[in-house]
Length: 535
Image (cartoon, rainbow, N blue to C red; front, side, top):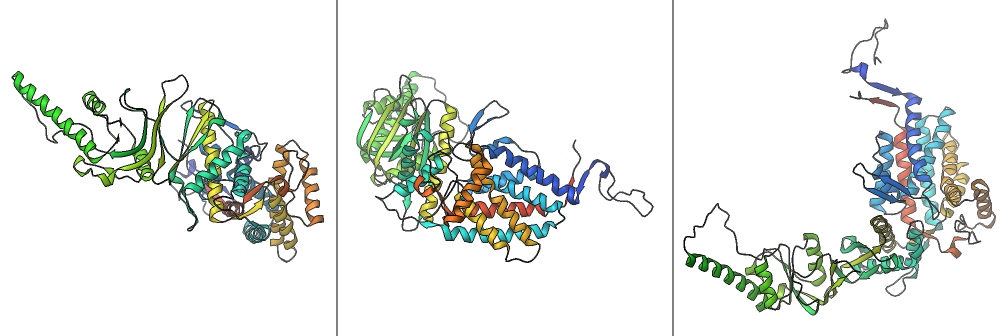
C-alpha cells in the first residue's frame, strides 16, 4: 500500500518501508476503533451486577484465575489492540482511584461508543459528538450530586458503611457471607483511619490468606500475622506482654569484608576459635536479655548453635521474617528496627500484649499472631478458603470493600445502586437535551441512551426481560419522581433501592461517568491509524 502519489499517479516514498505499513483513515479508522472498544466491553458486560458471571483466565505458565473483577479480567487478558489497551487502562485507573466499579466503567464506555457509531453513520462530525458527550457528562455529574445522600457514621455507628460494603461484595463470589466480610472490612478501615484528616492508609491493612478451613473462618486480627514459627520447637508457644527486639542484623559472628583465610594447624587454635565464636553468640544473646527483650524477631537466619543458646537462655526467637512484615510489626508494636547489635536499647523494643503461635488443622503449618499491640494502627485480615483461587478472589473482593469504606470516610455521600442512579441521570440528560439547539443535542440524547446500558445489563444478567424491566423502572421513576427506583436483581419484590439497602459511593459513580466520557472522546478523535509492519 503506497502512502503518497505524485500528480501522475506514481507512488513515491515518504515513509520508511511504506509498502509494509497498513493505514486506516477517516470513518473506517473510527469504526475499527469503536468495534475494538465495544468488543472489550462485551466481554465484561456479562459479569456486571450481583448475578454476573465469573471469568476463568489461564496464563501462559498455567496459572488459573477465576474472577469477576473488571480490572483483573482485563489485566490478565493480554490485549493486543491499541484501542482495547485504552479500555484496560480505563479500568485500571478506576481501580487505582476508586477501587470499585471497574466493570461498570468499561460497559459504559462501550455503550457510549456504540451510540457514537450510530451518530457517525448519520454523518455527524466526531468532534461535535465528543463535545455533546462532554456537555452531557457534566449534566450527569451535577445530577448525581443532587440525588446523593449524606451518610452519618461514627466509631460506634457503622451500619451505613457496612451496608455500602455489602453492596460491593454482593456481586462477588463471596456473597454468601458478605455481611461478615463487610463488617471485617469496615472495622479494619476504621482501625487505621484518621477521622480528623479523613484519610486512610490502606498499606497498614495486611490481607493474608491460607488454604484450608472455610470462608466463615475469616477473621480480623488487631495486630500482625507472620507466616513463620518459633525457631526452636521447644520455645514457648505463647508470650504475654512481650518486649520485642526487631533486628535486621544477622545473629552470627561478623565476616570480614576482605578475602581471608584462616590457617589452623593445632587443636588448641581450633578450640580457641570455637570458644571465641561461642563467646560472641553468648554476648549477643546476653545483650538482648540485658535490654529486657522477651522475643527476638530477626530478618536473617541463625545457625543451630545460636538457636540452641537462645533456647537455653529462654529467649524465644523468630527468623527469616521479610522486610515488609518487619516494618508492619515495628509500626504495630511501636518498636524500632535495629540494624546493629551495638544500637540495641530498651527504648527500641516493641510491645505486644500477646504473641502466640497457632497451628492449622492436621498440617505442620504454623503462624505467629502478634496481638494487642501498643499501637493498634496496623491490622491483618486473615482469609481462609477451600482453595487458592477462592482465597485470591476473596482478597480482590476485600480490596474492593476496603476501598469503598475508605471512599465513604473521605466523602460520605452515597447514591443508590441497582442502576437507579444511571436511570435518573439518563432522564435528566434527556430533559436537558432540548436546551441545546445545535447538533450537540443528538449527542446528548445518545449519551442518555448509553447510560441505560448499565441497568439493561443488570436486568439481562439477572435473567429478567431487559427492555420491559428497564422501561417499567424508568416510567416509575418519572411518574413518582423517585430517583431510587432500580432493577430488582435479587427478586426481592420491590424496585426501591432504599428498602433493598443497595448503596454506592457518589465519587465512584461520578468517576465512572467522567472517565468513560474521557476515553470515548479520545477514541472518537482518532481518524488515522498507521500501523507498522508485522514481522
